Image (cartoon, rainbow, N blue to C red; front, top):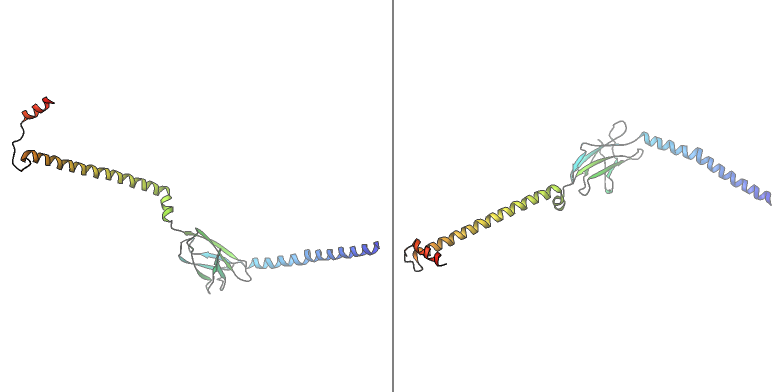
Length: 199
């Protein structure tokens, strides 16, 4: 019985050895050759602009390693897979820059080539809230508030001076003309002296 078990065990070891031999010396080298062939044919993605505005339509060109344009390459913006475009005969494709991120990775793929990519920066306009939170904006807002406060105080002071001037003018008219419009004699300086002495 032991010899049958030993024979069966040897057969299993032989099968495992043959499988490992096949894997190590046939499959791995073959896949390396295929990947080396793919690496010989790789895509280069270039753009005329390194920085584009949000929602701007811009173009990229896909070329092979020899700088020849690659037609019918699938080009898309990473994480925006629903907008895959194909290059024309000049290797050019037009894309729309998203407005929700500051940079994008553009990927080009074609069967028989290793994929290529490039990164483009996007100028995203700041929202009103982001503008207010910036340090420069806070200084500008503080200056505007300070100037507004100074103007407010100056206008109120000028109004109160004008009101007081009218009151004084009215008082002088009442003293000069009386309550019925008759001209009264102006009080003499003796009368003021008597009032001040009695007080």
